Image (cartoon, rainbow, N blue to C red; front, side, top):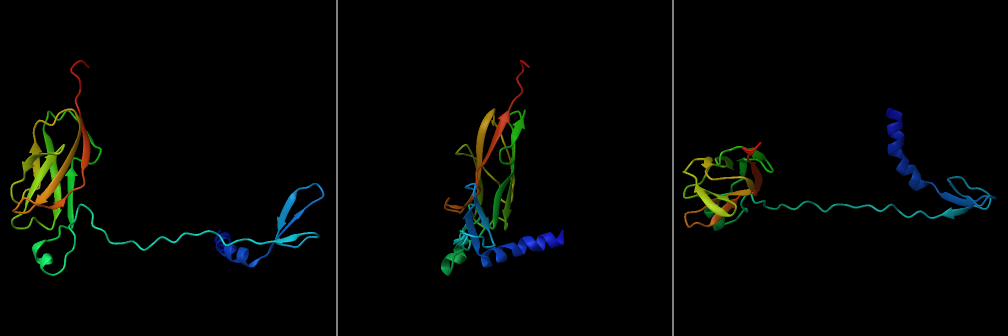
Length: 176
């Protein structure tokens, strides 16, 4: 098995070094070989097309704030992690009785003067108490919903925002 693997790895080096010949036999069938044959012509093989991906660039996701320099760095602390843990993306919740438990994860801890707001379907539904990462939302009924959390500074400006989490609430029919 190891010998086969070595041959496979070395094959491209041999393929680039060898000449390829093409000829047509008496039946009109075209043949290719690495050995010259009577009436064969040398085939020029172009180098294989390759792709080199560019080096990845550092981007900021919606779960972290942009790194700043100078005076801006002192004003805007970075949240390296900000996400909604519960409910999970594309989760289907059955028979929750309109009560939705929400849990978020925030690293580092919430900075002084910042608050966390929870939005359901684009509407502000709850501002979490200082230091809290959990909430229970009422009146979340049947259907597909989108949940987003946002860290806001004392002026109400968004400092960080989670990726949207879409989930569906299903309710068993009383007819069934």
